[in-house]
Image (cartoon, rainbow over all chains, first blue to last red; front, side):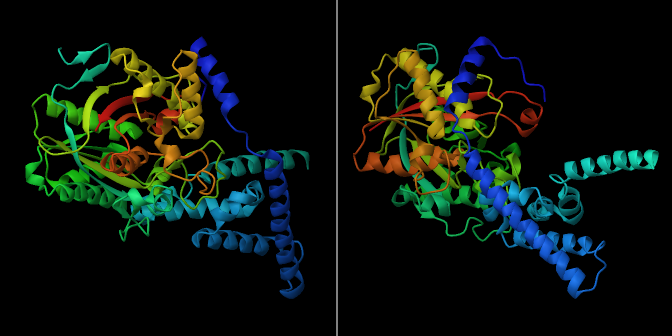
Length: 151
Length: 335
C-alpha cells in the first residue's frame, strides 16, 4: 500500500486537489454518531435488562443473548434495505457496535447470493468482516496469553 | 496521413452522420432534469431480471434496439458493433453483441467509452471500412458499486466529493446518406496520471486528462472555444470540472459558460443525493445520445465538443496503492 513517489508536477496537482476536496462535516457526523451510537447502547442495555429481569438469565451471562439479538436486528435491517439508509446519517454510531458487524456480513452475503451458496454466500460473506474477525482472534490470543502469564 | 491535423487530431473528409440514438435511463436518472430527453425510463433498476448484471445487459440491448428502430434499420444492415462497459472483461457488451449478431469490436475506455465509440466508429466510416456502425455503452449503479466498492446494502457513508454511478445505456447509429448531426473531427488523448490514488475522487483523477485533450484539440485545430455552443466533459462531476477549468486557465485557455460536464447535467445536484454528480459510461451516453442529440434535432445547438473521460484503474491496482491512469477523447459534432 506504499504510496508511489510523486513527481513535482504530480505533487503540484495533488496539493490543488486537496484544496478542492470538500471536507466531510466532521462535527455533525461526530454528533450524529454519538447520539445514534448511544441509542444503540441504550437498546443493548434494555435487552440485557430484559434477559436478566424477565427471562431470569444470570446477569453475568445476559450480555450474550442481548448481543445475539442486536446482531439479529442489524441483519434484519440490512435485509429489509433499511440499514444503509440509517447508516448514512448515523455513520460510526451504527458501524462500530455489533450492528455494523452484522451489516457487513449480511450485505456481502446478499450481494453474492447469485454466485451460488458455497462460493457466493459462504465464501464472500466475510469479505468485509474478515479483517474484523482476524483482528478479533489475534487480539483475543495476545490478551489470553498475557492473562495466562500474569495470573 | 492526410487526415491528421496537428499531433492528435483527425479531420474527416466525409464526416459520418449520427443517424439515430437510443437511450434507456435508470429510475434516479429519470427523476433528473433531463428526463424528457430519454427514450425509456426504468421504474425498477433490476428491470425484471434475476441479477443486476442481467439487468445491465438488458439495458444495453434495449438501447441498441431503440437506435436501430428509430432509423428503421435491421441488424443485418450494420457492419460493425462497437461497445464497452465497466464490468470485468466488458461482459455486458459481449452478451449484447451475441444477442444482436453484428460483428463486434469490444472497447474498454471506462467512462470515456461513448466518446471512444463515436470516434472510432467515425474513423471506420470515413476510412471506407464500414457503411453503418452501431456504437453503445452501459453502466449500472448496482453492478459497478459491487465490483469497485461495497455491497449495495453495506452502510458506508459516502464522501462529499464522491460521484454516483449512472444507471442507463445509450446507443448511436453512425452512417451516411441520412440527416443528422455530423462527426467532423476527433482528438485521441494520452494517458495522464497526476498521482491520484483515491478511487472515490475520480473527477479529480480525470480532470488533468480532460484538460490535456482539450488543450491539444484547440492547439491542433486552431479553433476558438467560443465557436462551440457547448464543450462538455464526460463525467468529471462538479469538483473535477472545477479542477479541469483551473488547469486549463493556468495554461492560458479560459473556458466560459459553454463549458460543463455530463455528470453535472444529468442530476439535480441540489435535490438529488448524488454528491459531486454522476459518473460511469452512461453519464455521457445518456446526456449526449439523449439530451444533446435532441437539442441538435431541435436546432438549439450547432456545435458540440464532447470530451469523454475515463478512469482506467482496476480494483487490484487501487488496492496495491497504484495511482489512477486516466484518458480523455474529444469528439466534435456539428449540425
